[in-house]
Length: 552
Image 1 (cartoon, rainbow, N blue to C red):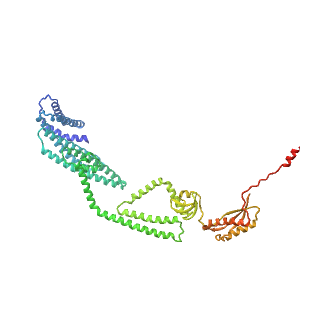
Image 2: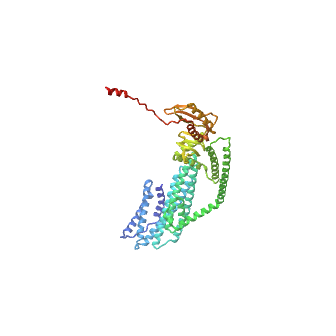
């Protein structure tokens, strides 16, 4: 397609070469003049050959014409910079280039309009090809515009400035800058809209949007390149390009040295301030109302949370619900938190936030946190098991996790135990649930198991009466179940009696210590001994055997 454009451009070159005779260049010894003369002759020859050529031969000739014209312009640059050069001759050459550029621009503009119409009418499957043709036409127009500006600079160097032509060229470029800037802004908006639609599209709609997305991206890329090239040309012509550089920055986000220009920075700041002002004017009242609604909902649900907590506290504290302290605290805490969480979600939805991505994000975050906090979740799971099965409660005396003491606080993660020596020990619930749990104070009545030993020479029946009297006389010993006093074991050093009275759980240790003390005092008064551990050693004497041996 690029080659086809080159062919079409040089249709005007051929006609120009034929209708306008080349100026006669007098013989010169200067190499550059000779080169210029040679290039003009070669261009004439190629132009004549092009009129009688077809197919690929014509393509080759027209490409040669383009290259020769570039060589000619390069040679002209060297001659124009030479103060001794023939200005009259050079003026004719430059005028010829000006005429050629004007013809080429007209032709390309016509082709550009035709390509734009073809793009608008093309089917989705053909739009990429049509867009490529349009892009190439724009690229060549910018190339021709650069050559036009260079031509007018040459004319000024040769002493024949073209102020009117330069003014017309500047107006032309400013018009194209405005158009390309608007086209880029529109294309970027279309691209953003496509991005949003792609997120929810399915099936055939998705395929159509994907094609449209590719076209929109190509269009934006093309407009960005064209606007960048036009801005460079406009900078060379001293045209104010601050607004167009701002558009390029806003649409592409590329940070260049142009941003250091005070005009560009001021343009960006002005644009952002204007957009912010417009946005605030349109949205500030609605935002204030939404913030008010948000605060009102949060306040309302916070009040409702406190009310629900009080109601749940009363409900779980009644005698009809036999709940552990852990379960009571769990329901009280969760009721308030659930109500407040619902309030936050409702408040967020009222300010326009989409809750689906937020909830999805919480789900993903929950999985990640779950992997990171496996031990903590294990404690939490164990806390739930303690909550459900209730092996102990706050205030119980327990032996759990190899710790003995009174439970002072319970949570779903850990349990706080206060030992007899007034130490506070926090035990993870996973350690408690994974070990043996012994609840000493769960039952209201306990049996005290005690063993007392007497000597083998002491009166057994008397001892039984003494022990029975001690147990029955203690006010804290329960009459039912009856205490059990029996001779239990004939030990190596003592005769052991078991004494097993029943008491209230709260009186366990007081009764234990009182009976132990009273047994010692009564045994001393009654003359009943409490033997020390002892062992008898029997020696079999062999004196007679020794005497008989001596006599012999």
